[in-house]
Image (cartoon, rainbow, N blue to C red; front, side, top):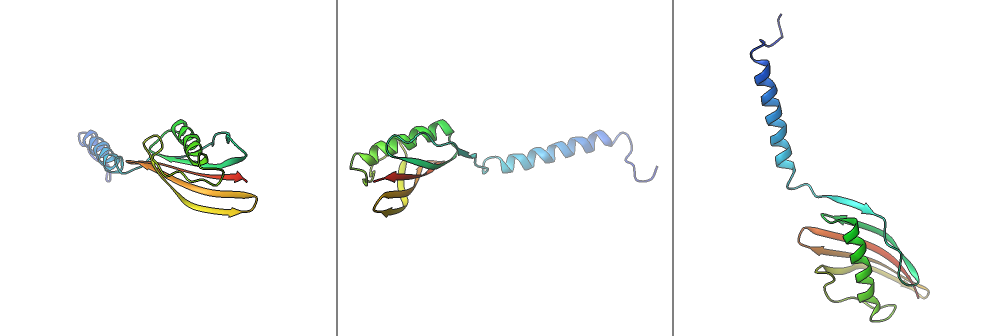
Length: 124
């Protein structure tokens, strides 16, 4: 029976293996972020939301924030910008490309470890 552990050692090896797996999971757990790609909500005006991604937040929260950000931005006209916090999130339009007929933007919002990123296309 060379190569086999004695019967009395096998349960101990199993316990060591389980403890090692738990230790690895505990080390990876806190730093692992919950990220998801979500279906964007219906665009309230003329245009559409093209993408929505959330990290450490639910898709429902992401959809609510996207619509609230749109409302903030559009208060200053079709090409307006939102310069205040939205639902407690700090948002920045990280990319904006405009042509005479449309505006395309990418918005990143953060609140602690939560991140919500969306893109949109606004018809002008």
